[in-house]
Image 1: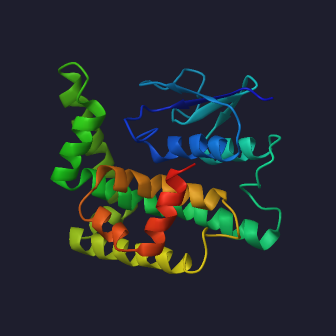
Image 2: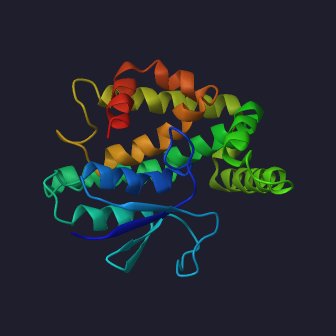
Length: 232
């Protein structure tokens, strides 16, 4: 059996990682029923050439990027269904939805976490409150400045908070509608698309970010999906 080590930013109680991208391969390994270890780090290991986490060692072979790690996990022997279906139409939907969650939904989470002062303070305390001074004050400020700068460069940060929240509400209702009469976003079983969407939304529901949390909870199908994913 393959030896899987996932290198991740730290988590907190109730959340395996406060990075949605680190959360993806952790959930993937659980979903596939494969044994794995998580190494929580506060600095990117020197062998990670991208300078980003998550990263993984699978049988001592480095794998970088959350999607690449999930694909590498998916091809390992397992009795569980494939996270990336072999059916071309289903696989196309999975690939598109995973990429949308990574590249678009992610920025709505960033906006909710860092732009709203109350959300940011709660996140900062939970994530960094146990660090020694001055790091527990300095690191969150640097992260916030960087995140908001990137949010603006991405384009979403140029919108008003009201417009951004309205767009997020529309997206959540669209996801809710897609789940009408079904358990998963693509096909009849769990796929990488479900993991990618869940990993982003879980950051919001765990932190109870305003107003994202209330928007998600008013979507019955989406909430039922989140509860199913919590059981993995």
